[in-house]
Length: 463
Ligand code: MN
Ligand code: MN
Image: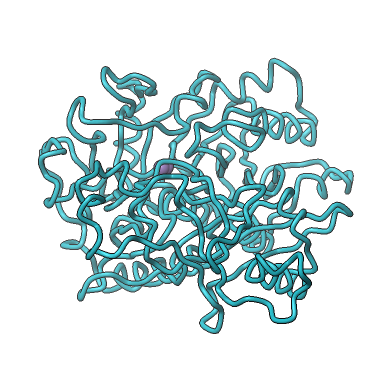
């Protein structure tokens, strides 16, 4: 049952589209390095494509009807897009659900200190990271500082070529005998992931500041550039991410290397599929969530009521809301939980089971289940539903493969699938295979990105 490499069947026209999709995708990775930035960019693109915010639509007093394109945003970090179909919403929707948060280092609330003429920002990592991967590489700061008067200051440092970058040091190899003998999880301690941000002391400092003249200088720069005080870090969300743009990867340019591809590769291709839809029979939905990497918690995670409340508002706007109608709309929906898969890596082949692994270039990956050990924590998709989805993919000439996350008992992972399934809807995980998942630079195949977009569109049309 080995699946064919998708590259083998591409026509010149396909190849052109693959390149264009990859180019647009790289741009998205570059401008969307945080969940806030992703929402901002996609709202911009959606509005250009004729989407209107749910609030604006409600305020207009116009009834929502078939053909309308509506989006809703929660707390600037989670969003849902709807393309209203011909059928009543009560009959269910076809939903693509992905997440737009990625592993990173968050700046602490009291972060700034000086030690031996060097100034640092202290961090707390977010999501699953191999800490040793985050040292000795150029890093950027993205985020917001909200002042007491409510003003939000946007911060991006390290992306423009003229910008400085920030950095986490590692111990030189010459002195690393003891360090190299440590377990990988302890080589770099979480508490030591501190960002080096300055080394130049302020001249002519007041006596009290003399001991911390480098820190004082950094504070001066922050004051000048952003108009913020040290206390403003208390209400800041600053994310430390790898600096630089996503790149083509490989001499044959068949891959994309870049930060945050889990899960922006599925989020973006799901979004593209939405944008390319004509008015569907069943309402199409694309849901892009936050906080997946820390358990889908909080008001902007999948466990929140954001989605349910938004669908309720949508039905209210269509004049069809009732408690039972909402429940029916949700339980009669079906969903692709669009999240990435572990790509088979020959260098680490022993951790995979070859018959049930995802391979770069063999198309979108269906994961009937995720989870750990005895499928713990997974949404195990129903065979009937898997049959339906694979028929849709086959009918639409989508290259797909099936896989699970590594060998039995080696590890595991979860997605938002089981949470959406709580409504009683059919859900299956489906996404793009990634190499070096959760590392600062992840790698995907352009063929798989293209097939994902095709798959998502086919699903919206035919499910
Ligand atoms: Mn993911
Ligand atoms: Mn992840």
